[in-house]
Image 1 (cartoon, rainbow, N blue to C red):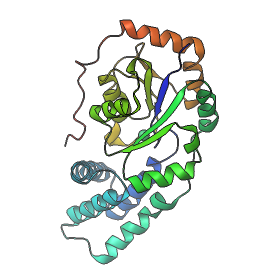
Image 2: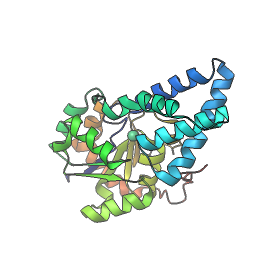
Image 3: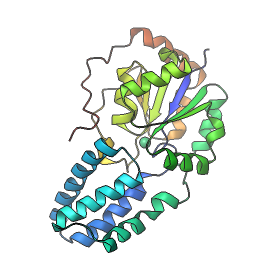
Image 4: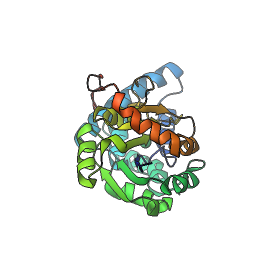
Length: 257
Ligand SMILES: [Mg+2]
């Protein structure tokens, strides 16, 4: 059988990430309100501010800190002082510094897949932050190439395919984000596997299409070994011929506000 090109997302696919952000958000909300209903409304307000800032400044911890400062200022109707900014920076320290916690079975699964397929890492975010996590994960040597992009749009996938000369019929994207790992990959005719993570960031959620020969959902990362096992991989690649085009699929605006 032919070997496949397997592109992996990193955050919340290979290792824990968003739980660190959620812990900071919880601390900030604790400071602002004890009321459950108000908490939900405030969270929606923060999401809106994050979307706006991401659109202008991109992803990463520095932008997250900026969003939190804007959010606190918005709620209190007064700009953050030095003390509040220092408090936010302190809360965010674990995002910058903490050890990488691989999700269960990740290393063994990647090693098994690497014996048969070509593995790539495709992640988005601030370059220095993503590099730190990749280095700390100890997984870098398992990938033929690693790319950190500003955003995982259909164009970003096209560029990746062109850069490495990959045949899209034999290429799959694997990740936890419907918005970044599934929809744009399907839009450029890649296969996609969603590995849902319960703590996936709200801004990464989106409706996904029904499963098909080119779109699978697995509960656990370790199930990828079975999915991309010899016989199944062959079937999936052949099934591409009859694969229904996703071009008309409604892809939500990547950064809709
Ligand atoms: Mg992810």
